[in-house]
Image (cartoon, rainbow, N blue to C red; front, side):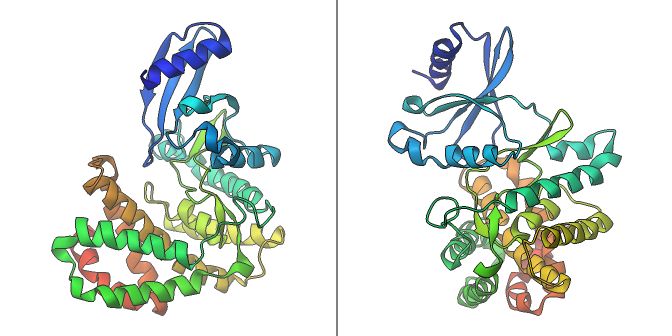
Length: 335
């Protein structure tokens, strides 16, 4: 049976009627597929995840995180029904208006207010505590995870997408620089819960409020990780004044909620180092999607992401070694 047939079967068993339409909708860089299911009473979203099955249902991270976030009143799409046998979940339809789309909307003046409210929501997310022996609290941006993300960038960006302009003789030196950067960022005493992909394509605007999606990869890390994803987004570029305002807004909120003991200078230091790592990770993903998956929809985000990097390199001496090695990319690609 096709995925659509399985969706129709689950719909019939749950609602005791036939769906009127099952239409695919665009997902992001994952193996999950999404469909909008229409019936006489409205719509819902069907998600097909090949990783979701009966054997792992109790430990399926989407369900674990959905439960945690719902209990802490974080706005997420409601779970309506599921069928682990076919890897299906029915979710509330929260529309198609992503935070990213507000930048093309007539009321762009509302963007700063939305971002402040979303940072309030991020603070609510980062305030969640749990058992450090259970997912997601047992997972973190440790050296192994950061090394994996740097290696993914090396494999798919440097040795594939950018291979014609990258000198492989620089590889050992770059790995050494990446190891040093990872060491700076592994600071468990500062760790909070992070969404991990907290950017404008994973935040829906529904009935004038933000709704968080794609939260199944949450893990512990520096609070700057999600702030970087939001403020130094690969998909939209914020006004520089708003960028600085939001950094301060996030820092003050962390302090007000007793989530950080950093000084503001220390916060900004880790923000820049984390931003470098996060943007490098994103470049690896975009290169992989473009070159390996043959998905061209991410290629246009490569140049804007590269464009952030010189600022971090100029401001933080700890990044200059890596920056010097990556200079051919910045010179040839950044407009």
